[in-house]
Image (cartoon, rainbow, N blue to C red; front, side, top):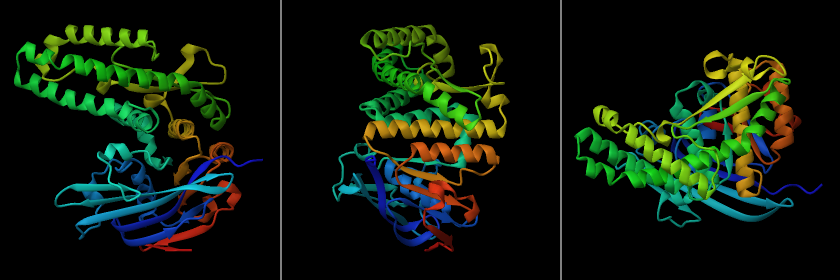
Length: 390
C-alpha cells in the first residue's frame, strides 16, 4: 500500500525559550515519544513546534512570557520535510525571533522575511492535542471563536485577511461608540464591518456544516456508540451556505441587526452583533438512539470524560481539515492527552488515531506505560532538567 503524502519535523532548535536555554533536536520521520515528569517542559516543547505554525502560543500566553527568565530574546527554528511515497520532495525552514524589550517579532521562511507575518501562517501543517483543549468545550465563547479563527485561517483562503479587517474595523467602531461619535461617522464603518464579518460568518457556518457528521462519527467511536453533535450559534442568522445568495442574505440580516441595536450600542459603547459574538455548542445523547429532545448540553451538564471526548473529536476534525487543505497528513502533536480518561476511552482514541493519523506523531507523557501510539514502536526520549536523553 502506497504511504500517504505527509509532513514531518526533522529538526528543532530552541534558544532561551521557556525553560530551555539551548536545545537542538533531530526527530525521526515517524515521530517520537517524550517522557518526563510534570514541570519538566514537555508542553513547552510541543508549544515551540506549534509556534512555528501560528506564531503564537497555543496556550494563549503572550510572547513576552515565552522568553526564558533572565533572558531578553527567544529563538525557535524548525526544519520540515514533505514526503511523497516515503521520499523527501521538499523542505521548509521556519524561524522566529522575539525581543522582549522592543516587543518585535521576526519571522523568516527559508531565510526570506515575509511582508506580513500572516503570510507565513500555516507553513508547517500541524495539529496539537492538549489537556487545555477542555477549554474548547467548557470555557468562554472566546475560546471556541479562537479555535474557528485558527482552523479557518490555516485552511480557508481569504479568511485570515477578512479576520484582520473585521478586527480593525470593530476596534475603530467601538472607539467611536465609546466617544459618542455622530451617527454619520459611525455608519461610515458599517459596510466594511458587514462585508468582512459576513465572510467570517459564512466560512464558519460552512465549516461546521461540512464537518458536523465527522464530529458525530468520531465522538461515537470514542464514546462506545453515544453520538455527539456540534452546532454553530451565529449572532447573525445564516443558512450555513457560502453561495452569493446566502452571502447577500447574511449581509442583509447583519445590516438589519445593526439598525435594530443602534440605540443600545450607543448606550453601552460597543458593537453588539457580529462574528465577535458567535459561539459553538456541543451536545450528546443521553443514551444510544435518543430522541432529539433527549440530548444534553455538554458545557453545563457533561461529565469530565464526555467533555474531554468532545475536545479530542473536535481536534480530529481539525486534523482532517488540515489534511484536506494541505493534501498531506499533518504533524500530530499529542501532549499527555490520555490524562484523566478511563481505559476504555483511551483505547478507542488510540484505535482512531492509528486509523486516521498516519503521519509523524510527537507525543508526551509522564510515564512510558501511557504510550501505545504506533503500537509502542516510537522511540522513547526522556526529558529532564531542560535536556533530552535519547
